[in-house]
Length: 253
Image (cartoon, rainbow, N blue to C red):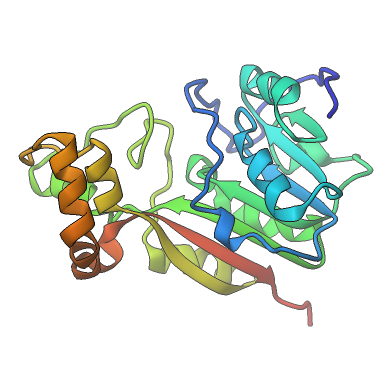
């Protein structure tokens, strides 16, 4: 793991400064979608404090080269010092890779990143140039149809927060359908787009929707165990905090 400091790149057109509030998340919700073979080089865009590197390393094995890119200097430095990334660059993707010798990857991940970008369509289009033949993009994207958000909206509320679906630095909002359309519109084939982090897990863990009666945590856990999965099925797409997109670029004619 490299500990060398790398100078931060200034935001490019359409890039916005981000917050230094995000936790060191390993993202077990994304782990099932990671390929188990064929990855020699992986890039995590918006790697934060580097928690996902351990998940990548466990899934991909000890040999693949792992690169993280993070726009918040303090988060990037923490990842540089404490994570399993081989290298962490401070800056904005894709322009921070301009002139870099290590430009193509078998896997590029965006975990809660695309919704922070003014023009994620252009970012995804540019990502194709950084994929090796047969490479994949995996993106975890918040679902704006998530039931607790819809409940707030029905009550006349749209309250921004430091983290979550209504993070104050989110500038784009997606449903499952528009996630797929975004990828397909810039030249990808979507292999899958599946829900992750269902609502009953959040409620059982201590975060019932605002305005909903909140019994003690042990009771919520019991409810989640007995009827939560059925309730999630009834909610359909609204049950999921995220969708995880797995996509490959279409062949150029």
